[in-house]
Length: 194
Image (tube, rainbow, N blue to C red):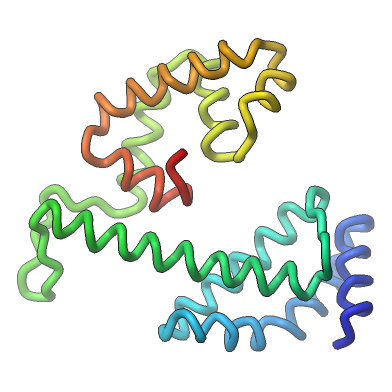
């Protein structure tokens, strides 16, 4: 598929919510992007999951996407970044397990202190539920929506200092409530710690 054709498909997807254009883009690029992801990650299933997630995020954020070079480069860059993020999370998990002295041998798995993604999300949500709505929302916009303090301040009609205070308050609570799990939760579930 030619680069200008891909760019046209992106145009149709973002402007007209064209599902058929998205399906065409997916069917033409899924396999090549999986092959590309395989340069970084040897597990085929993981590669497919990461590429599917890139397509999901592309559709979900189609109105906000700003392509600076080409749609092809946009997809390739996002798959590459997804692979790098996956490898970082995997390395972080290994470091965390090592720090906690948790072995992951098939015969010797200790469930105590090892949480699945669902349990970690529940721990985070329970801690966040203890906060006032405006404080919690400020934190979510900062950490989970990647908005700057200035963007949040403008959107919520508050000062940047207030945004900073809200985020600081939440981090203080999370450090108390979640202790050793906070870096793992924020990195593994939400991609980064800022």
